[in-house]
Length: 118
Length: 131
Image 1 (cartoon, rainbow over the protein chains, first blue to last red):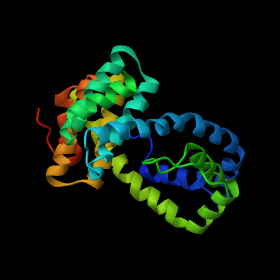
Image 2: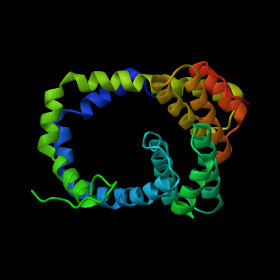
Image 3: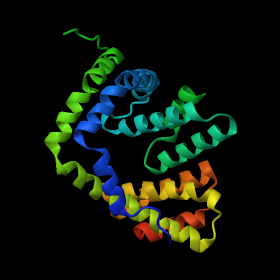
């Protein structure tokens, strides 16, 4: 199997790129763009939290088991922003199956999917 | 320091999160952190990436052996990269469940061939999927 970059080459590149002064300069130069993107990109995930919690509370999901549903919704939001139509429907159905296998309640997953991607 | 409004069950306001991100995202701070960490950053990178690197190359070998068209490789490489993450986080039956769930997802969401997924999982982790 041909290997395009050896591990040694990758580490050498990373080491050169992550020079402290250069990396800090890059961060400083891109701060305005980064903050703007953070606000734009993170807001939908943030706005989902209280909506998810209401569903989890109404279904009596124990606090210790709520994390898996947040992970599910984050994935839904991620793919909902990127995909649509039947492609998105397939992804949502596959995610529901995946998370059911991981121990989530399919009825709760279904309610969350309806809420986030309709 | 401004106090950000908190709602019941909602630990941090969005404006609070943005304010924190804005303060953290500072070039000088980043330089100082990287300088303080020194070679540890590079060692951690090498240690962390080697697992993924190995998994991807093993998967490529399987894909080449099976004659999977190059245009479809990315799907399976993404699967292998996920496996690499799981390999350091899970083991035993929990790992098996995680891999099963992931294989189901790739099959149903992206039309991946379950037989190819199984062979990649076996080659990367020594774990079989239920197909």
